[in-house]
Image 1 (tube, one colour):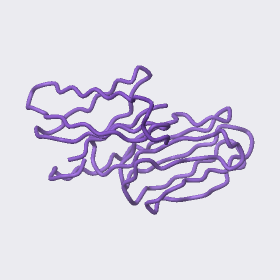
Image 2 (cartoon, one colour; image 1 turned 45 degrees about the horizontal axis):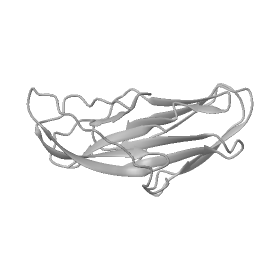
Image 3 (cartoon, one colour; image 1 turned 60 degrees about the vertical axis):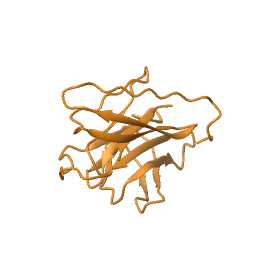
Image 4 (spheres, helix red, strand yellow; image 1 turned 30 degrees about the vertical axis):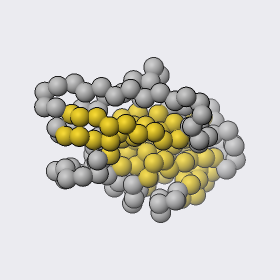
Length: 168
């Protein structure tokens, strides 16, 4: 979310992505600028993790055995930082990096909830791996539940989980 919100430091708890069975888990995750992101290798063989960034969050590291954990703190907001394994080309994951705590990753049914958003008018952005971002506006009233429904027509730009972030 961009706007005039009270400064809230990022969580001290790291966000973790695991490489297990040559799959990134979770495939889509959200994190804050400055929050520690851990990429763990649970496989007993080599992975080479590359963070493809257009916002100065890039890295490229080898993890040759199980138990290795790479940690980094993203410097800049980015929707989305693409992770891939240079050895196993089917391995892809995405990290939505934001400056505020008002974001969520949808569940398997496509539902999401963002708690404790201050009252106001906002633009919220949803991101889909294939179709990219779409935006909607929402008004948040004190003590009330606000609902935003996103749907893709299939005609959006080619870009399965979704990252949602409020943007003022």
